[in-house]
View 1 (cartoon, rainbow, N blue to C red):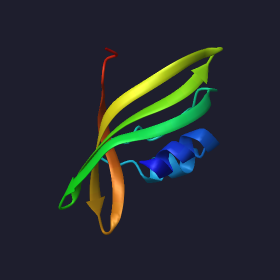
View 2 (tube, rainbow, N blue to C red):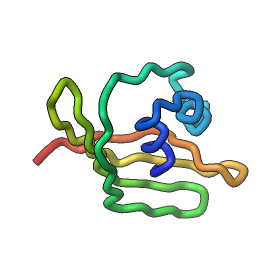
View 3 (tube, rainbow, N blue to C red):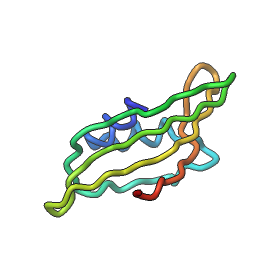
View 4 (cartoon, rainbow, N blue to C red):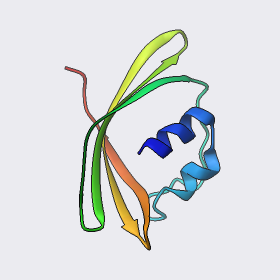
Length: 92
């Protein structure tokens, strides 16, 4: 998860696509011009080759602070973790 956050922050589209599972990958990706401010991993758990990560990422877009709270699913294939999908957690 941390490496994907860093890739978003640095605009590394090729890395993001390479770590996205082919079954759910969008194939191409365009990143919005935002300033990433930080990542908090709240929970991470793996069971065999499946993993779940709950995180909050903060960024600034159009001068406004935004919090992205997501629970993401990952799968490990041939020793590499791939992002499957995620559920956005609504603000309290």
